[in-house]
Amino acid sequence: MKNIILRTATAYLIPLLLLFSVFLLLRGHYHPGGGFVGGLVASIAFVLHGFAFKMQNTLRLMKFHPSKFIPVGLAVSIISSILPMFFKKPVMTGLWLNKPLPILGNVGTSLFFDIGVYLVVIGVTLNILFTISDSGQQ
Image (cartoon, rainbow, N blue to C red):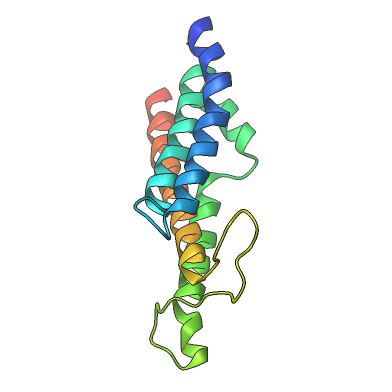
């Protein structure tokens, strides 16, 4: 697509969408939001780039194929889920640092679980969409 308005708007919207997705991710372990919704918003940013600049350029922009995010996200989520077992607590019990970190606030295993979900959602969503776009071009 050679639409100058879409390309110009995309250049401004992608950083805003990615920043908003990180906001949703970080807000999620205190309030509604989190890894799933943040991952969908981040995926939308890359899909928008794909519409404006073609999917091959978006894949080049990402540096890693979206399918690589899936096992990393699953590993982070699983590790954060079973980590409480080593402290003699039930699986998926929230463990928290004693002192809040400056920007992030209280950091615990629920944040890392959300980060894992965030990566899995980005990986699955973009993998499906890129596969569909590849099959449509053949």
